[in-house]
Length: 144
Ligand SMILES: Cc1cc2nc3c(=O)[nH]c(=O)nc-3n(C[C@H](O)[C@H](O)[C@H](O)COP(=O)(O)O)c2cc1C
Image (cartoon, rainbow, N blue to C red; front, side, top):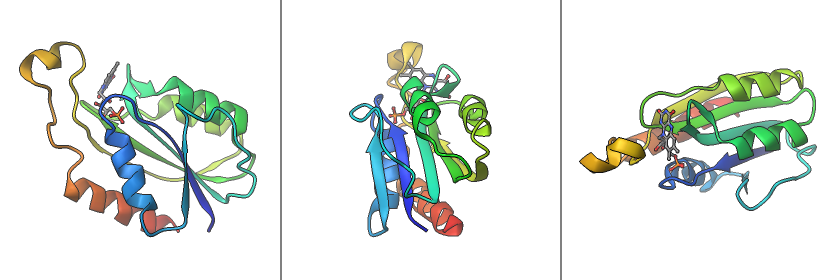
């Protein structure tokens, strides 16, 4: 199954670590929404959206990208990293409008120094770790 992952990762590159681990040795195209705002995804059967959680949702760039570029009737999955907990509600809302089939989601902790956490040196230091990356790859292999 031809796969693409559309992602945003600006805080500590936590989400980038996940998507790069998955793309390593697999036929997966990565699209970084901080550089690319639009792309033709019609050639992909499996489309992933990946993001850190910022103020309780996927980054606005990923939501916008999905709104503008997700073709109808695709298999879709979500990847996230977060300091507290994941939240896929906003991205789910977007893909729902495209008759997408959500085939799975994976999330794990990511190093977080936002706001007051900076004062204590951050939380979830060292995450995602090797274990997280292996779990993300295992998750992806189960999809395709
Ligand atoms: C501006 C900002 C807002 C954040 N809001 C949340 C949040 O609402 N919930 C949460 O669990 N983590 C939150 N975090 C922590 C990030 O989700 C976490 O560090 C994530 O791994 C960042 O991914 P990235 O390095 O790929 O950007 C926030 C971080 C930043 C910088």
